[in-house]
Length: 115
Image (tube, rainbow, N blue to C red):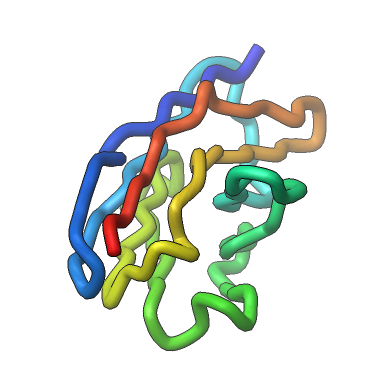
């Protein structure tokens, strides 16, 4: 069993910043993937950013240059630094952690950007 908890969401003004955190725990042998998804009102779930076991990263075009994903030395906690936020970034953000045995999701954290 792998447990994932997100934190750091909140309400910010356009142009502001937030830093999300995702902590994974439990039966972790090796994490192959940790990513951030979001679901905006009236839209389908979108993959925002991810980091692989080797440390390579990728970003959705809509956030490239504004968001940065990183992790701690233990590779069990990831962060999403979100800068220059716009109302289009308003969504519930979910952390996804994948191992060889588990595909675990957090409960989500709300990010709201006012115009």
